[in-house]
Image (cartoon, rainbow, N blue to C red; front, side, top):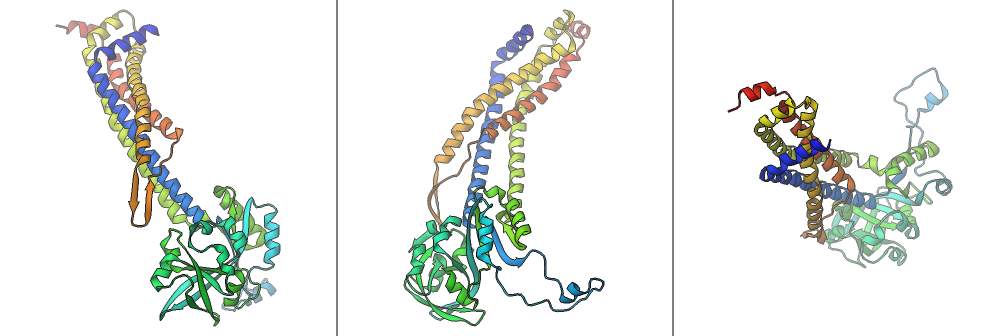
Length: 411
């Protein structure tokens, strides 16, 4: 084996210029693959983190998991009826405090009750339909990042007046309102009330910042004309990735529809999956191009060393030994290029992470990158595989050469 390694090392050492070019090709491919993977997965994780922080991990609504049956269907099992009106069901979750207490016994995370409502916001002659969310400021900070998104005021500002409201900063700008402005809320239930703006928030999601307001639970209950109503329970789990499994168990236990953040954002997560496929396709293409350099150097060595191959085979070297010499040369190029690619890839990733940029929607930020050993190992595995494949075909051609034909045709 030492003799095989010595021959392989002699071949690549005497073709130093071409060997260095092939190593540089593998190094560049591995480095840019690591950099791209770190950048794309970093931005993906940052987006998912922002998405997860902006939404509750699980939302339990007062919608039944299974649709209500027709009254006649409940009485007559042998008959099927159509077009009958279902029983009128009182909105809201039944016994919400008991349900929350039961879930707190096993759900790993924090829970809070809320009231979802719709209202028309009137101010300075403008009418805008907004989503009104009734919250408990004492527990809201445990399930959402609303407290950290406050631009003016705080969650406790809702206690300043009898009907206080927090509005998105884009909504206040659209209305021309400000803190301490008096606005009018009119609900679909025919309730109209005056409310005072006590703070503004900026979540980073345009739809939320333009169409959402937060009030106390009792204020939202008055708008819904239902004292004590709770039509949503929001949950923040310790592990966001377990939200789907937990929501299924909650639905089975309570009978209400529980929606995890993965289900609520299926379209975005599908787009991220397609984005990952595109990323790994590009990374594979980069490494495939780099493998052509390895193929070129091994093919050239094979062509130039035909007489040496004839001598080796005449001395008793078998075909697989000849083949292994050139495959080892390809592996040497791949391993050396990958080792230097790790260093260059890390430096490029650090360089990207140090860049600062500013958009019209945010202050100076650093480009999010993800440092992961998986990126380096994956790039190295693909680089070695492509190098072995690139060296296999010239090695196979070298092993098939017949020494008699080579020596007879020598000049």
